[in-house]
Length: 455
Image (cartoon, rainbow, N blue to C red):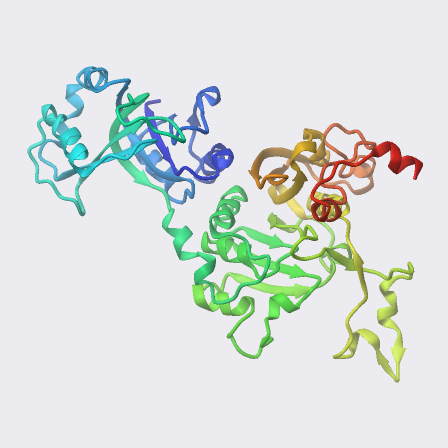
């Protein structure tokens, strides 16, 4: 298979290959690459694809890919680059009469317009005779100088690599601006960044004909992005106030419905509902092609579940007062108790193991204390396979985007002895996300385990 140049956006470097793999599955395109040659310090990466048509299809909905180009050559200097390009002169002939343009870009050093023009003129040996068109050119050629990442660039430094190719297709980074939360009609304090919401939709393989569910829907960011890519979506939350907004469902002035109207996605978002995920109304068995969610960490919004602090069961909601069942009263809210983060994740895993179809994906955020993270912290289940684990650091803590795929049918109690254990199967290991809210507000002070045990 011929090589192609992938030009990544220089954001979320730990997420790039996970999205690339997801896109190859979505588009049913075979790709190959050497993972050992990937560097987060460079936006350029070589992959092999069967042909240009498949390369264009591969990146058309990519969020972290700017463009993909047919590889024509590379080198540590322009002399080295030109030597390689001149080995295939037959490749130039097909484009000699086409309208064309050159795009010159760089990483780690800024190039002036004069420098870019000088670079373009050095490619005159290609003999292109067609008109130059900066807009709507039939062919676009890509020159990229990679100087590496540096806090203090040296003015006359040598590029560590120069790349050249014919642009085949571009990603969908324009969607980051379209779904920008600053332009959103309705926001909440937990609304997810647009770029990451779109990325998660790709990780979830959201597509026409698929059904996506968010059990902690909040203001509905994932409903928007997954439905944009053609999926039907549904969401729920234990607190309906963020779903409804201040005006409730009477007008589309705020709440999730306002955002659906803004993006014209009302026909794809099937509904939202209010209930505790631990006491959900879904029928038994597999229902969803993907579960995409950002579980509440207890930082900006506390996690809750039905219950009372004194231990009585929430079935008191069914008590009849003055002839009216409690839960039917307009002013009645079921009692809730705090929901510890490690319990949230364990319950989410068990729910996904049952409710996902085989081949379906669970995509969720896992907060963790950065210095204490251990791969064993990621829960496992016998019917769920870890596909990707990408980190977004925030200093003392980070969050990890976990992608899992259901690989076998859920068998209920047959799986019960291994539900949601830590990655190693060590049930005695305390993950770095346990009691995350308390750790966050204590500024991640280390825990004295010996004192905790004796105290």
